[in-house]
Length: 110
Image (cartoon, rainbow, N blue to C red; front, side, top):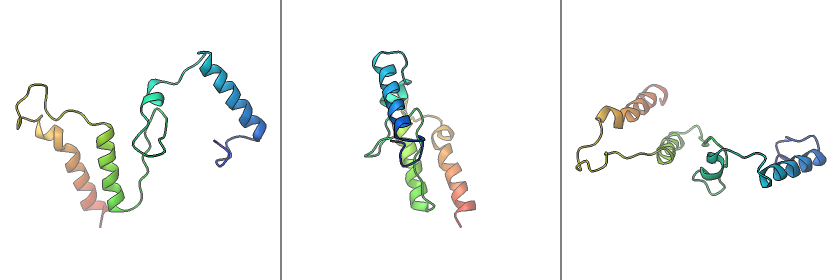
């Protein structure tokens, strides 16, 4: 890793980084935060980092897919525990994002 992006000056620098990082992790001298270990995204080749960076192309289909993927990653309950069906959270809270997406589509998607 890092070779394609020319992150390391040479193979020796890459190998040194690999060995030192491996030592730090195995001997518990350092650790990544939990999202690096647990939040690996939804792609076949996951991005193991603390933040999700989802790829988006310059097309309406890709942009709307991006919103769906974001929603699935950060989803939460629409109803509170033991709340009757049909008694969702405040509509503005639940659908506010939809309104913002609609505004972007209307103004930028022409």
